[in-house]
Image 1 (tube, one colour):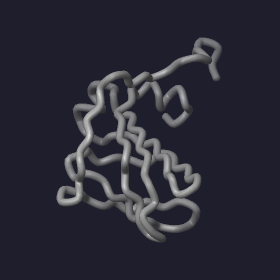
Image 2: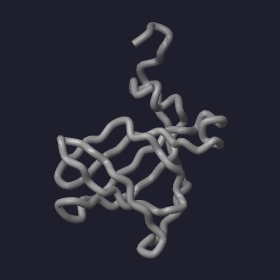
Image 3: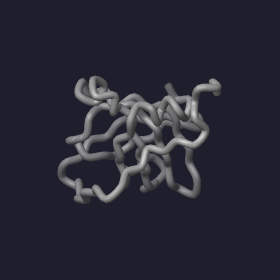
Image 4: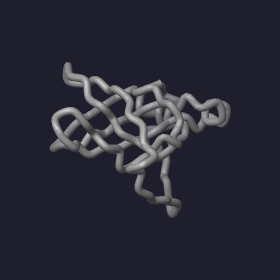
Length: 111
């Protein structure tokens, strides 16, 4: 950590949430962790991402990613946090998707 970097910094998403089902409007992307490939199901309206970090605990998968959308990259709001629930031995379904400021990825050492 550089001396100019602050230790206590947060990207706080507050009071803005949308929720919907995506049974009919979903896509799958391959994701590999722990030496095994899985299918990650998510709404097809979300932008493509580059997976940076995955952590699994008790059938919950936490993913940090970078949005590949032109707008997100130009606005420096290209961080993504996803939380997915394990469906079976081969599939996870994203239940939480939040955009993050790119600074969040930098602060966490992911950029």
